[in-house]
Amino acid sequence: MAKRVAVFGASGRIGQAQVRQLLRHGHDAVAVTRNAAILDRPDFAGARVIHGDFSDRSSIRAVLEQVDAVFAQLPSFASPSDKVDYARNLVDAAAEVKLSQLIFNTTMWSPDEPPCGEPHYDHGRLVEDIFLHSAVPVTVVLPVLFMDNLVSNLVKPAIVEDGVYRYVQRPGLLANIISLDDVGRYMIALLDRPDLIGQRIVLGGPERLSVEEMVEIVSEAVGKPLGFEYLPGKEFGEYFFRKNYPHFGTDPAPMMAFFDSFYTFNNYSPMKPFEVDVDRLNKLIPLKATTMREWAAGQDWRTASIQGEVGSPAG
Image (cartoon, rainbow, N blue to C red; front, side, top):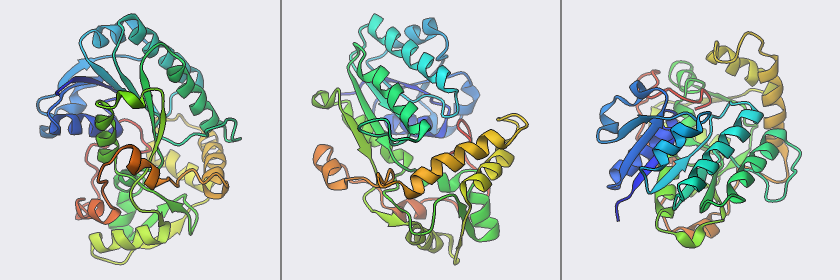
């Protein structure tokens, strides 16, 4: 049955994929954003675009009163205190209107039993618990790593122009990398799964690939051999800062420290945050997910230009 679903965070590429998939699956998509012009593209024709602001509970409630369900993700680089406030505003408004279903996308892994020692992940788990411990029927999804990062402003120009995948993943790192559109499809599947309310579901792609295997697959799609250049955390943080200035002020040091901590954990933790139990996921939500080769073949590698490069600069 078609539902009217509000997507909070719709202007980011993560939210855009959810709006796109809702439309493709015959649902009534309500894209909630502070920048409606971002969604003025043919692939979003049919979506209703309305203003909403996580810091304004009245605007949140006005949206929730009009919909059957909500897909939500918080701004990736909001401050920790802002994320807590945004989460509370959303669940409080949802409880007030007695929303029937909320699917919260963390946009990242987090530990089953915190703390894990990495501040970004531990704070993410704290925010999850605001949703899970609320009076709202909530399911949490935790996608581990996105294929679409390869077509972000951080990565695609280097692939197309320099013939190199330049990133902060260590050589040999394994990941069940997943497409943003598949994350949207999993969230849509949950609209018909009230039995999974209250659960945390880790999402990943169907293959566990090393960085080198991923680069080989993308090389086939690009039509030329690609190199792999590993950037350590601090170096990548400075690279990220340069690419996304002036989003993050004038001092690269905080971003360098963040990526140093975050990717030291991702690269070396025995918790292996980028690996997913795909057999368990398939039993829980049967869905034919996109392989890396299928995804790469569907991208436009003829140009370094970025389509839909909005929202989180992280891609």
